[in-house]
Length: 477
Ligand code: NAD
Image 1 (cartoon, rainbow, N blue to C red):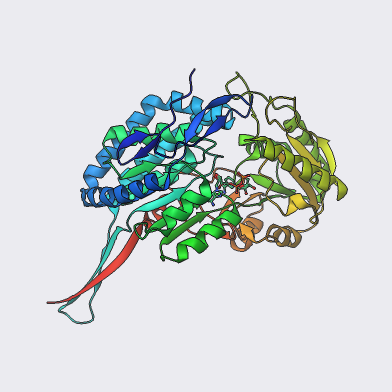
Image 2 (image 1 turned 135 degrees about the vertical axis):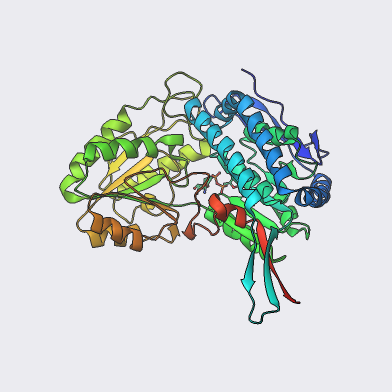
C-alpha cells in the first residue's frame, strides 16, 4: 500500500509552494522515509491569507443549509476513502490500524455533526423594557481562522479544527503536524472534492514557529485554535493578544485515575490498561497517575502489570498489534529519563521500563509501583506508555492529590459509592471527569481543559460557538 503525494492546499490548488524546501516524513516503526512534506514560503502564506479572506466571504454568505449539504458530501467522501486515510495515519504516526479506523469514524461523525449544528446558529430576541423596543442578539462566524494541530491524533486533532470552523461559517488555514501530513491531506481532499470554495479550507506546512508567527500576526486572522503542549500554547496565546483574536487552547494534561476499594479491581485494571496504552500513551487525556486505595493497591498493581505484559507490540499495519511505536526517537529518550528518575524516587518497575528492539522508536508498556509525588513523572506529562501507581489512604487524600497540579484536562475515577462520586463531581478540578468509564470524547459533547490545560472547548455546541461572535441590535419602532 503506497503513501500519498504530499502537497499543500492553497487558494483551491494543490501545490508544493514556492520555498523549494521540504522535510522527510518518517515511519516511526521502521525509520523508513515515506515522503517529503513541502514547506510554505512567506509568499505562499500571504497568498493563503488573502484567499482565506475571500473564502470567508463566499462561505459565510452561503446559506447554512447549502454549507451543510457540502459537509454531508465531505462525510461521504471520507467514508469512501476511510481505509486509505487510516493506513496513511498508521504509516506516519505508528498507531495500530484498528485505532486509525476508529479515529476515522470520529472524523466522519464530527464532520456530520458540525455540518448539522451549523444550521442551528440561532440568535435570540430579548424582551424590551418598553413596548416599542426590541433587542436582537445575532450569532455570526467570527472570520478567517488559523489552527495548528499536533501529531498524536492526525485525524481527530485536524477535524476538530476544520469541522467546527466550517460548520460555523468560518474559513480555516490549518497547519497540521509535519510529522503526520498525509492524514490531514486526505481529510482536506474530501472537503475540497465536496465543493468547499477555494480559500475556505487551506492546508499549509512549514517551520511551525515561522508559520504560526506569520498567520497570527495578520489582521485577516480572527481566530486561533491550537492543540499541543502547554508552553507552546502559552506562547501562541501571547502572540494572539496583539490582534485580540478569539483563542481556543487544547493543551496537555496529567490525568489522575482514582481507584476506590469498592470496585471490581480486575475490571478497572483491564479498562484502564486498554486506555493507558492506546496510542502508546500519546494522548492528552491519557490516564496518567494511578492513585489507588491501600486495601486494593497490591491487587491493582498486579492486575495492571499482567494487562501491560500481555500487549502485542509491533508495526501498526501488522495483524493483531495492540501498541505501536512512539512518534519519534526523541520521545524514547524522554521515557528513559522519566523511568530512571522514578526509580531514583523509590519507584519499582513491575514490567517494561526499557525500549523494545533496535529498529523504530518502540518503548515497552511500563508499570511503575510506589512512585512518590516528587518524581518527575508525577508532575510532567509523560505522553508515552508509562503508568505510575501510588497508594492512597483516604478520600480526602485522593481528592487533594488529584488536584495537585496546575493542569486540569481529564480525570477518571472507579467508584461505586454514590456519595463519593458526587463529591468527585464537585471537587475534582478537570475539564472532563469519567466516572467508571473513559468514554469522554464525542462529537456532541464539549472537550476541553481548565487551568493550564487551556480554555475553550472543541465538540458540542461549545465547539461551534468558539467560532462565532455575538452582536446585538436594539431597535425602537
Ligand atoms: P512540541 O511541544 O514540540 O510539539 C507539539 C506540537 O506543537 C507539534 O505538532 C508541533 O508541530 C507544534 N508546535 C510546536 N511549536 C509550535 C509553534 N511555535 N507554532 C505552532 N505549532 C507549534 O512537543 P512534542 O515533543 O512533539 O510532543 C510532546 C509534548 O507535546 C508532550 O509532552 C505533550 O504535552 C504535548 N502534546 C500535547 C498534545 C495534546 O493533545 N494536548 C498533543 C501532542 C503533543
